[in-house]
Amino acid sequence: MNHLVAIAAKSSSDASKTLPFPPDPNSAQSTINTVEREILEAGGRATAITVDVRHSEEIQLMVQKVIDVSLTGSDHCFFVE
Image: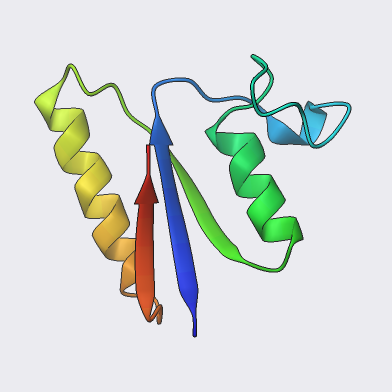
């Protein structure tokens, strides 16, 4: 099966600069971008989406991004917040 994981949160980071990698999942260094990098490096498909859920327009953009990436040939799309 071809799975895609969409990870969304308000905070993001430059995962390429995170050392050591992977960071402790309970640390401030662990962000949607480090989770995305872990999935990609394990051979999976993932996308990190920065969203502030206090703003409805950002939620709408996030939903559209999830729809757009899920239409790229995935059997399933999982959303994690």
